[in-house]
Image 1 (cartoon, rainbow, N blue to C red):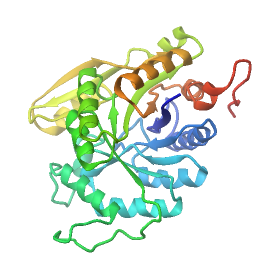
Image 2 (cartoon, rainbow, N blue to C red; image 1 turned 180 degrees about the horizontal axis):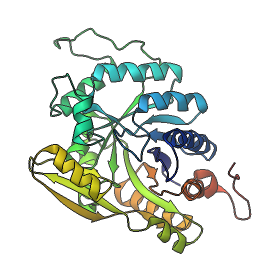
Image 3 (cartoon, helix red, strand yellow; image 1 turned 90 degrees about the vertical axis):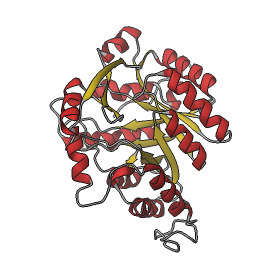
Amino acid sequence: MSYTLGILDQSPIFPGATASGALQQTIKLARYAEEWGYNRFWVSEHHHAETLAGSSPEVLISHLLAQTKSIRVGSGGVMLQHYSPYKVAENFHVLSNLSPGRVDLGIGKAPGGLPLSTKALQYGTVNDGKDFEERVSFLQEIIENSINGTHPLAGVQATPLPTIKPEMFLLGASTDSARLAANLGIAFVFARFINSNDAVLDDAASIYRSIFPTGSFKLSVSVIAAPAQQEANELIGDQKIVKVHLASGRTVTVQTIEQAEIFGKQAGESYEIEEQESTIIAGTPAYVTEVLTNLHERYGVDEFILHTPVLKEAERLRSFQLLSPLHLSLSEGKSVTSLK
């Protein structure tokens, strides 16, 4: 295998379960991810979400680092439009001092919630969310301890400075995000599970590679593996990608039509809702691996970050096991590590 694999976990709250239970499942999955040979384990940031428990990745990352020994752990990602880059750097410097060489700082541009939660996050601040590029650039300068001498905050440091800096990633689903990551010289993760338009992926990969040929290009994809193709297809169901196009020109991705309606109404402007076919890669481990290999060869993907949006706990965990480096590397006739 010429690429590595990681996991993105949104701490889903399964039907009939609790948020506490969802977080315990995240802890269990992180431990298995380490045991099964995954390269990294990321947690997401979602606000005022009844079906997702991960609203504070920094807090969750700290606990996951303490519950694991070697796997890289990080954010997929911190929604920087809401926060001071300086405070984000402080948080991740503390984490990097607690677990040197294991911390990933993934940054996202999306709000991570509906307009009401965005207003709550930015309440009392002067923030319109339009200075994202400036925030990412300043965050990088703080992490690198390289703030320009002419900057109003020249000389400031986000202590405690770690011996090994957190690795920065930009998460996005557009050509603009790919260009920004390349210009900053940081790794880029294209969220194909959010934007299923492969023409955009084509352009994003081309732009990133042309500007930053030695950079790391990663792809976050929705996958579900099962022993048989039919079962994998049944686990997918009729999932769609739902987008809200606002009159102001902004587009956001939500989980359901109902959420799209709520988002549009809370935004206070006219909007249109679009449903797209999901691009969940479903099938046997051999089939999913074949698709990933084709994507790797086509786009030069260095790593796949696997997202599995299935609301069945056992089947979701099994899918990650079936696609794990440990499982795929075992020779025929050997059994995989049993689920505990």
